[in-house]
Image (tube, rainbow over all chains, first blue to last red; front, side):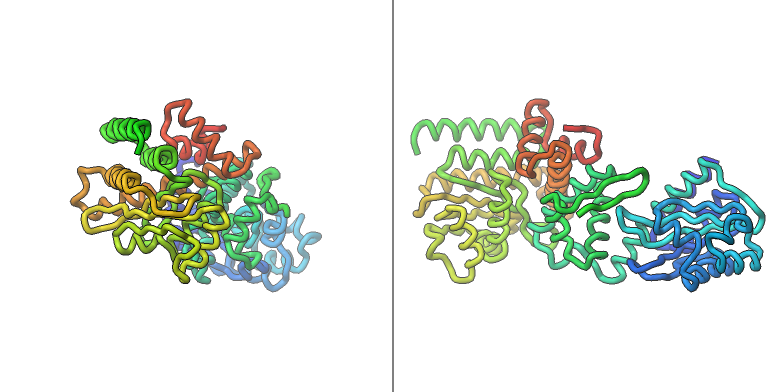
Length: 235
Length: 236
């Protein structure tokens, strides 16, 4: 199991620009039949980036349309939502969604949040027709894989809308962004690259220049904290 | 130039020669050079700027990390003596900043506000190419003594050699890689300042001082200390 997990992580790191491969990575490690990766909500809009089969795609489309489901809950809470038997726990939490997926023959659904820093913008959705469950170790592994996917998705989204942090920014403000990256990496214990992405994401989500966000971080007006596996931002 | 100054200049060049034949940290070397300009030459503040791949000049070493000083040098790299020296490959002397060119108004305002009245920008040259500049700022107006400028130009040349290493002078691909390496070390130093500023609850400037003290007392290069702070294998 751990060997296939390592391989799947390698695939994910390598195939940053091939969203279709994200799903394969999850399918190769976990006892599931299908996977989908979607952005949901206001930050990046609702869109299915990849789905391994039509049912996986439909699961996400349903949740967009209904505004309810495990993906929404995973995204809002920043925690995995594990539903090994949707028939039993689903009806009270997500009545419309459950009715529809049970009709499609889905038994188990697992959703993992897509988040970078305090920014939450989507979910990885895994499903199985046969009832199945994920062990604690598998849950943790899927969470780690979803973190890698999160960074790819956010980077690609920022690139596609033309946010290039180096353009039209002076050398002096780049220096401030590097200093702020250092503060953030110490605050939430992530790599320098991830800290930079957190600042970039924060700037994008609040429609402000990266330099302004960096200055707020340096002045202590904006702080990132880690609460368990979640990262929160305080102003 | 008095005898004491001459003696100190001699000591400086001996130390530089020692540094260059050994393994050395290029950021430490540049820092040593700007500090020497301040301590030995008739200079209030000094800084070295290098051009990145796009030709934008960035501060890689300065006598103070105070953000106002760094910002002023960056302004000088946009419209000021620094960019003129970089473009022409020549020394640019500004004996009175107050009466300097109209186009330099942003630089002028920032420099005067910090009490600087005169400046020299010297090119970091390699044959036909200029890779950056050494900037000398003084709180008194007037031209700098010619011996000071000659010594400073020699420092600038040593900085160029230190950045590029003599053996790779002929290969332009490696040249730009080494320039980029020097600039990247600076990125990691900025990140490390942020780390220390957070972990020790001090300002960015104080963080830099703590890093330098640690590097000195442990005989480590500043770049190494910075890299270890950023990958969290070292805590200050």
